[in-house]
Image (cartoon, rainbow, N blue to C red; front, side, top):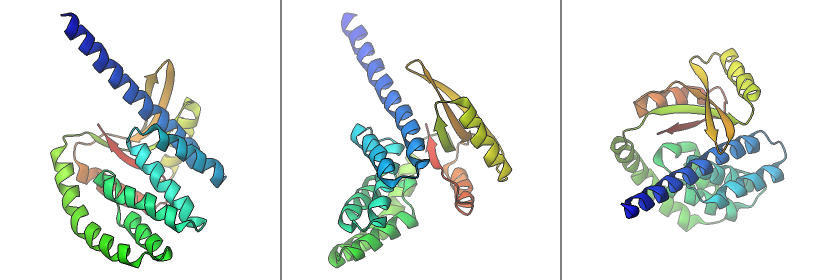
Length: 214
């Protein structure tokens, strides 16, 4: 009985730590997205990456860090981060744009041999990996537009999205270690393909978002 109680406590602590890392990363990621100073934003992305939680925000921070490195001409560093993202990130985060940036970065870095290898590898395997992974997970999916520590900020984003013509936007509040986090999200759907179609339409509007689920 004591062993069972001890195991349960350890499991609950692990879940709580993982949840806390995810919610903290969400707020930090939003802060970085809203930061105009690239150096400051880069440091925030570094902080999320160093948490090593491997949440969606970890991978998106790897991508954003790579984009910054590419923009300032650090092509080798950008290529390394983009390789990690395109090869190891959850398939629903990998897009043709992220692969294209990886290929451009390899070209700029003079890595022509690596370019040929990864063009063949990613174009052949990612689509297969993507379909298998998504089908194997029974998730509720939604689009997340932001995460804030203040409700007013979340409501402002919600109204802004509605003004842009988006419907069914809601603010979800989650208590984390005594602090309330406010998420701006779409309504939940059970089909990944449905949420993916919504996301494809949003790309034309130049709106920051991630596809997420549980």
